[in-house]
Image (tube, rainbow, N blue to C red):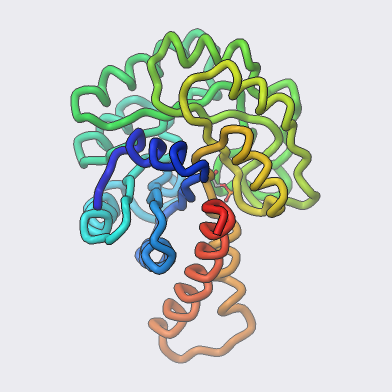
Length: 279
Ligand code: 13P
């Protein structure tokens, strides 16, 4: 069943869980995510990232109708979300296609410009009923970033007082905050700033989002969920699981590669959903 970001995060808040939020740059990942969520009977968020279009993986126009059809058919609540939209024209295209959640990522802009453009994204989304996630502070490199560009200095972590102002002035439905996670493969164990997260949660009224959410320890997932994280963005380690399922093996048929990778991604996603849902 297709729901908005606001609706699915309300379920997360009520159940004190985090909803897993997974990128779908191909049909194999989309099928793996839906199968895992349905098997565990848990809500899930499907995400198309603007950067995946820029990497040539698939366009929003190609994938959105498939995401929406899968969400409507699903036996569990599913939000169809645009991940890291970095320009308002891209967000507008996503809203026209029917995304029920959009993230405007103005983290590379000045604070003033991020505030103004996020407010505009909220006005645009109000016209279709979609919800808006936005980010203040920065997670460093975006998806597709690799281990060498994953450093995220504390100076760009989310400032709790700024976060409060950002949420109040923009009217967003969910806040992505930076407190030590980064996108991509971790080359050393991430050190999360739990005190900062707790402070943000105490000041901010909307659900909090953790990006760079794959590759974190089970204890840290549990702790961030207890401190207000309601949405965990997860992609790199499911993609890695798919690659590992076919590495070193010999296939003669391409569809057998897809089947093996899909099954491995489903298992990885299901493990993540179990932890995020406290199962
Ligand atoms: P990972 O690279 O840790 O999987 O994070 C994905 C993400 O945050 C998408 O927005």
